[in-house]
Image (cartoon, rainbow, N blue to C red):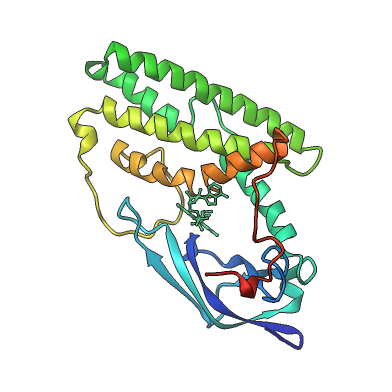
Length: 263
Ligand SMILES: Cc1cc2nc3c(=O)[nH]c(=O)nc-3n(C[C@H](O)[C@H](O)[C@H](O)COP(=O)(O)OP(=O)(O)OC[C@H]3O[C@@H](n4cnc5c(N)ncnc54)[C@H](O)[C@@H]3O)c2cc1C
């Protein structure tokens, strides 16, 4: 709701990663419910120190609370903290999401960085765990991880010339699939040790440091990779629509005012 030079925001947002350490948040709020769902949204930068912002931990499958639910009660946002025109929030959010997917799926990395590095380190240091079958899978995943790293490098060089396109969705989809396959192999490689989960302490971490954790943590945490930053199903839809130019899925809700949509 607009009040002069300010907006007053009420609502709830689940799954907000690192909200407990964030000073600022992106807030896409519905400013006109009488318009269809992709219209009538506006994009704000929200000061997390506002007294109306309440951040509560959401405990994840790992035992930790990296993300949160955020309750907004009468939060006042100056109109100067709006990005883009009123009602153009979806357009601004789409640009943000395309950049987020590149950041997640196509970040700069050295060869054998991250999760593939963790599993190859175990392979080299623990010869007693090796089997021929696991060797074959490790080599295939190593090649896939290297192909993703080099593809990401090419994508980032292309980006230097402009905004990210839908290609970032392909990188993010591969990132999620690969991380889940690597961490599955990692648990199998550790045998019985891989099945034991050592530390169920409820923590609110300050950064996302996955590679230095044990195999059980990595396996559980990577389950979220195919949900966060756009689910793998939605990313496949984007690739089908925008890269492969396949016919769009039929949608019955794009022209209906948001307030009239069944919920
Ligand atoms: C670890 C983690 C961190 C997160 N951090 C943040 C954060 O910081 N900020 C934030 O805003 N959100 C965050 N999220 C939320 C995340 O972005 C959403 O959960 C995700 O985009 C899916 O939206 P949803 O939960 O509303 O599921 P829904 O959209 O309800 O989807 C439910 C299921 O239906 C499928 N589905 C939906 N529509 C279609 C379709 N058209 N075609 C095919 N399948 C479909 C989905 O793929 C999914 O499997 C986080 C989630 C996780 C797991």
